[in-house]
Length: 497
Image 1 (cartoon, helix red, strand yellow):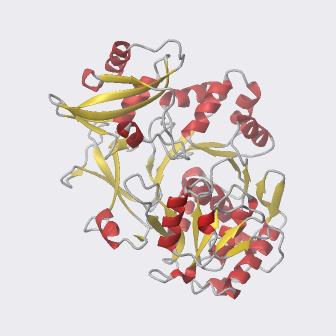
Image 2 (cartoon, rainbow, N blue to C red):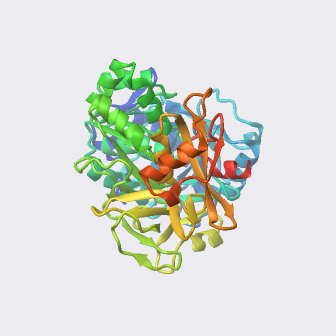
Image 3 (cartoon, one colour):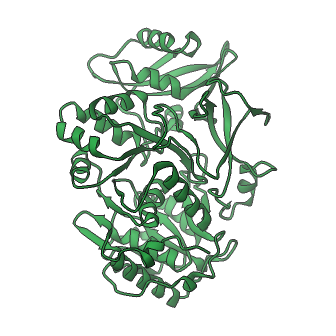
């Protein structure tokens, strides 16, 4: 098998690989610390984790935004085992489920970290980021094949207990190499982000991505526009964020010329995990001269598509399929949609080396997730534009609204609502209607709490920009929209509330 991190053995040892606040490790130091941890894991009986193996090859990582988390995951992968990132904000019940389901041999954490009682019975190893050891030679992990697990990442669990998506080593390598092609990502790039490390965005793209390229990552610990400006002014070339972060950046740009200048110097601005409203795209580009690139992926698939760094600016789309990824749109009956008209809505299905191999301990769910010919059913609804770019209109379960004989995606209505000056945040759902089948419901956070834009005004605003049948029939006002740790709006909470 090929190494996930060739720079640990062949790269310049003095180059900074990781920086978290004031703490950093060069490639030489990371190779030593991760190598020492890998040797310790092997000494503790942690063996490579071939598909279908028992618990011996899985190691939990208490994924705080600290240097030790990056060292821990790197060490686990060097040992040929599979890392199970744990969200430190998870409740006791969710953690108990993940521990029971994944049955890790031990948990890795930063020294001094206070773990919740549910982890009390787990064998603990404190990660020493300053340890000196030899990075394992290639033959040390030869037992771990490309198809063997690298990570078990748990889904958000919106429709039941979280499921553990088993991501093989080839999926990590394939996604990161495909993004290197799309984004012209090299070892000269310095990435800055403040994303959590228990999810594929912050961990796989945001930490393992720079390490695979031989570049550097600077983690902010906690996102702030001041931190972004500081790092971009100090030589960082790339910024990864979620829409909530870019919205805060867009809001701050008007009164912060330093931030605008810093963003203007970035080589690449990337947004993911949810759709970035077109209005925020436009505000950022107007103030900085830089465009924000969007990409599309899932826990189960890693990355599927992206706007290319060498391609046209396409706000509102997630680009074209990445190298090696097959993508199709299908009707509910499985008929493939061939039209590239920007209107024909279908479910995204994908195939490629970037996919997960199984939901851990859930053969039923795994089988249901794939078609008979091996396409993964994403549950995301999209249209294909004339130039081949994919525009996502929402989730099949929560964002596809069937009203008056039309299939309507919530996303385009949300973008239209966000262009109204009286709207700060917007979410769109459907609810049963005796006449239409479903009626469109808009959930609005007002830009000025003292003046709510009238429902009729918002409906007319949408009808003028899109079409009359896409206007909201009901408008509900909130102080804030419910969001998860990645900034995604939790629409089931809206419907249940």
